[in-house]
Length: 321
Image (tube, rainbow, N blue to C red):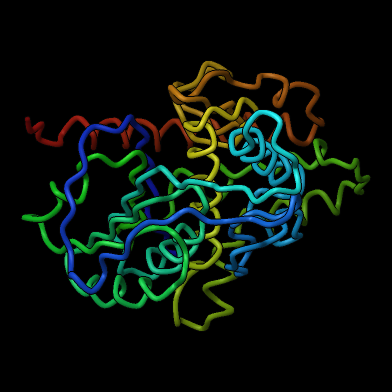
């Protein structure tokens, strides 16, 4: 079975920001200029340039969300009576910390977040080997400043004033929570609508449920699905930053406290806003196929056991001031 790593997000308001890192890495944040109405200093897949079209097929957020992001920048950047063909000055303003930045997921995640036009500072933390990651990443020519922090004595400074904290760190363990039958792809909800035979639905469901194991086997013991997990985390970070920035049309899937089912926690699509989750989307669990309804009921006992195990683990942790 695939070994997974935890990915945790913490979103909050800015307090104060303490900087610490190698002088060689202290690059001054700067505004990114755009010369076209359809251009934005953004990350679209692996494209990092001063002017990148956000409608790229490789964008994290897809064409519709990228267009929304570009539109929000355009509205903020343009002054009254300013022609749309004048240059836009986009100011990155959010600070992100990655805890576990030297790991297999942390490194590609750091690169992807470094390419976000919304990020002004990127703090990288790990227990070892993070200084080289920061030095390497500092050569990527985007506005965000990169700082490195190593060991427990520096984690406090790493977290000062950040808006989003991402923890792509973990230890090898058996899959749980988001593995096996607790993964339920709602193929009946695909858009545009696609028709599958019962046999195809079952085959696709099983393959999606075991996608992580498939990657591990394909890598022949050389790692797990680190790149795709980094991509997923970067997409969620970008969505979180857009929500903090006031975008009113941000939706992502998240495993959270929920009343959509009889379980205390559940993974579903949620609307994100400046204060976190603004709304659940109950319609996503309505109108399921018979196969999906049965699979949903079948997964509940295993998911319930994982939830209870997680709650018990959290309650055992010491609380520090």
